[in-house]
Image (cartoon, rainbow, N blue to C red):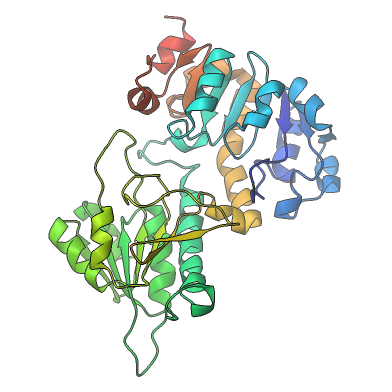
Length: 372
């Protein structure tokens, strides 16, 4: 199979889908890997490293035109529409719920698209998403340290336990991978940390991994209001069902919070768990509503691109190899977890969540592959 590794086109996106060692693994199995100039430069991987791994340096348009599978990080950009061709495989984060135009493009042009974020495992977890979630949580806390500074628009609060002054209060919604990433750093800095969740089992597991300055509360409305009134930084780490119309924190709730407090929306679902949150970028990361600073950068891990690329490449490479070795249809049929990530196939939408949100016809992935 001919696999393409393009340079990401999204603003401030420095990750790359496959490291040179991943390229070497594909080449050793007899596959051809085309890569674009500087595709890994933002993560510290040179063109020379990809050439040494067996990759072939290829011009942008030719790379798309001559490949069977596009292997990248971010969703399909409009600038790529004219470069993709019928029957091509697009293996990446897709976020098809939020990017209807690109989803419709794939359907119209018979692109087989497979989303990293929807590939699960036997435990019901998402192995290609978890490493980025941890980085997003930790990066979100570092962003809070930055934007809490008065010189960056914050109220001048150091998120650290300092003798003689009140210890800052941190509230985290959700104790999944990103919530644990936030909590690890926030607690290590000595803050008073509260995690809200609806799962006793998840909170009990998290309790054994975190120090005593982290408390756990059931995510009831009463407990949420208590936290909103006292918190200095609120982190949202809950992936919100795109079909829901309600929220956890409503715009009106911001009036309960201390003026100048900060909301960091790690999950970054527009109009999701936090009604007032909308996606921002590393270039323009914050905005203020009701006196509350909002940070909602939708690709936080890109700020730690070398680490992110290494972990992402390790998580997705086994699937890329399976697709290349078996062909996409057989790989999908053999692996129900990979099949869970199938989004579009031969003009059919195979991701239920996106079909429900946008009122589009849904086809079961296995039925689509088998032509039923």
